[in-house]
Amino acid sequence: MTSRDANNSAKKTEALGFEQHDHRTCVKKGMSAAEARCAEEGLRFTSVRQKTLEILLQEHRALGAYEVLDRLREDGFGSQPPVAYRALEFLVSNGFVHKIEKLNAFIACANPGTTHSPAFMICRECESVAETQSMPARGALGEAAKAAGFMIEKTVVEAEGLCPSCVDKAVS
Amino acid sequence: MTSRDANNSAKKTEALGFEQHDHRTCVKKGMSAAEARCAEEGLRFTSVRQKTLEILLQEHRALGAYEVLDRLREDGFGSQPPVAYRALEFLVSNGFVHKIEKLNAFIACANPGTTHSPAFMICRECESVAETQSMPARGALGEAAKAAGFMIEKTVVEAEGLCPSCVDKAVS
DNA sequence: AATTAAATGATATGCTATAACATGACAAGT
DNA sequence: ACTTGTCATGTTATAGCATATCATTTAATT
Image 1 (cartoon, rainbow over the protein chains, first blue to last red):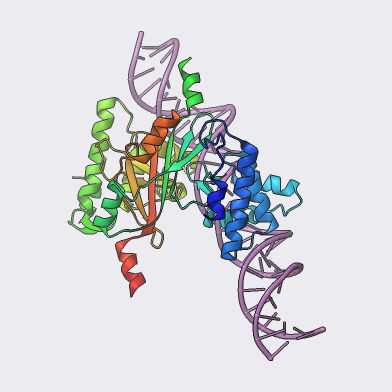
Image 2 (image 1 turned 60 degrees about the vertical axis):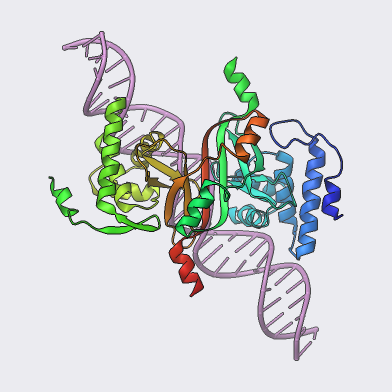
């Protein structure tokens, strides 16, 4: 049993979607997972990068780069765009954070540590975002790629629609 | 036959997506399909909208809004961003054009007239884009949405990787 | 012709992202 | 200790993407 497995062993309310969950726990969990992985792989988990991830974990929603930048500035880090973009690029390329292409925004990974090709459900009403899994390379897309000779490296899967809470509001 | 048709009258095959095809035919086909659908549904297929679609069909690749705008300006249309964005919005919302979120760019639909939820293969090397079909709402994403109570309205599916031609280059 | 709705023109502005270059922090080898 | 290399950070400037707003024109409806 690895330490990563140990993190998942407790019961918890979880529900990384549109449901309630133990938020403080998931912030901690995200930070530890990142710290562990960086140690394992010799990545430098510097203070700007830590703070950036912490901000995204705490907000628990998709933030634009400039929103992140504002928070970094408040915490005494540099105040120019590259500061945020660099930290975000590090976090994204190592899987701690995902970019939501549809929103041009960033969100902390909901399943830190697990290998996954994520998919997102984005509410067009309240902009809440839930993460789930997808296997796009199996199925029609994979077939098409194979037929065309296209080599898939990464996939973006984002569903836009209404979250449960906004569906309810729409009905009433 | 207009003079514009005459310019293109030679039958030529150019690279579409990743394959060869009769380019003149597909431009014509795209324009007719749009014209027909607009007539059917009482949509106003105005000259800016026509020209915008024609530009995208002829280029046959993803163009940024400002590239489109430049072309429109050359053809005597307004030169301010909203001119391009409005035409693009019309075309996108009626399915004649798709937005590639990953590139913040627009590409003419490859299967005009057919109902479809498109998926794209984007070459990170040469930025070529091929369109195919996807059924993301079947499969894992659909299950997750159902479980969460999320109502999917639209999906974005984009695969990034290497097109056949760039795979070859990479090997040699 | 009068009314209304839709599309366009034009100005201004805001948001997103990166290029380019200088500085600092740290580790490895001499 | 010092040079060198590498990576991260700071800073300036600019490029690229997108929309709000308001005035004007055009087209369809009555």
